[in-house]
Length: 402
Image 1 (cartoon, rainbow, N blue to C red):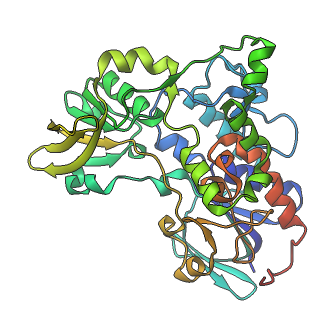
Image 2 (image 1 turned 30 degrees about the horizontal axis):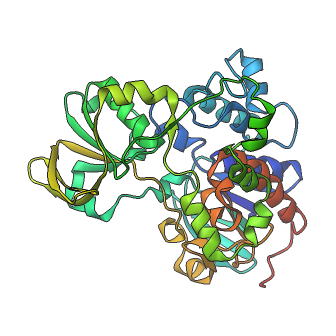
């Protein structure tokens, strides 16, 4: 084997896990473009929805919380206010990588298959690499989901993750399908670019949440809605504090919690811009789509069943992400078929190991086992040391089939 562990992916989960592995003396190689989801697939200028205290990568040594980095660099920071800018978060993530994961290789993994003693990986330039263990830390862009009824639009529809800059939409009519933070951020960026924006959603309203701006809440409020890295409330706190208990729930219950957790909601700082500038097309289902010189969406009002059409130049689907092993193109058919699943996600052990010995998953793909915590950056604080500890106990030995 060329190395003991390969980490596939260099976002917050991949970098955090690699830092913990290296700190434990495990020979580790990371492949991927560092922080690429944040650098290339989110609207420029956006503010993070997560609070500052819940927006750190996880390091095995002190001094690498987001607040530590901001203090060193003289950047604005608060546990809750001011909000963290995308640009500063990316700067922080890249600095974390340079310091704690300096041997990162920016080549992508094109294929992953089982091999005697571990795994065989093929990089995008054809290079072959062997590893005893692999940690898959795939970014959410692999799981971008566009409803099938929009497929007939061809090149007139795209997912929100395909855009960072929206200048090319200036003067165009654009329908944004969705009601969550991605939809609202995209709508705001389109308005700034000079587009005519139609925000289309099945909901009756566009939900926003306010910030406490760091003030101390009364104790009764703190008991009723405790704070956590996932937001305010007991459900959020339990999902952060008890991921091992979540893993013991029946699979159907786990999937339902992951599906329904929080729902679409956006930061209050976007409210005036979007509600004041976009055409809100609420309470409708998109039942058809057609491209014929323009994009035409067939809409049905959920209340009375009335039909209407919306004609635009482009459609952007801000319709979220569906973690699914079959959407990771580098996994071999053998690896996929050998992996036990909960829904479309891998069923994982307490140490994040899948039913394929030596193959681990962190981030969104782990949500079916450890819950909504894995959809948030703060989840790296749980996942990275847990995976590193499990791997370190068996480092240097070939995986043994269960």
